[in-house]
Image 1: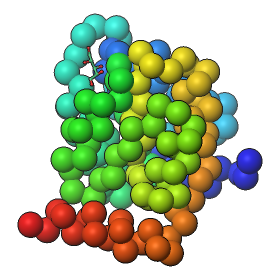
Image 2 (image 1 turned 90 degrees about the vertical axis):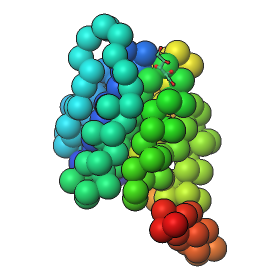
Image 3 (image 1 turned 45 degrees about the vertical axis):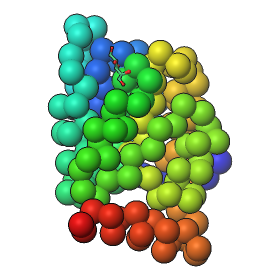
Length: 152
Ligand code: RB5
């Protein structure tokens, strides 16, 4: 695996994704990767859209290079994050999707489910996400076509 080139990660979760967020944060600390944790910090039930919005806005503004959003399935976070212009949030509950979401879709946020993957699997999936580059080429125009959907 190549050296991680990502400088800044925005990460957030709800209660359903807190366990895997903690394991990813531990990985970030261990590898000295800059990050900001947008919460939540406890097991108390919270509404995920606000966390999705805060992480997605920070990535869309360019304050962070990539984002990670963890909830029970990753689904709610991905639906919410994709409402923010400039965001390509991909549901990545396995390594293959993490790899393809970067290579083909140039995803800038990874969404993942703490009720689907283990904390150990979450780290492996995250590692794949941040260490895979967009391939460009024939995928460039497709990603542009996606982004043009924002300009209704
Ligand atoms: C919370 O119970 C759960 O709905 C949330 O974590 C997420 O899975 C939504 O998509």
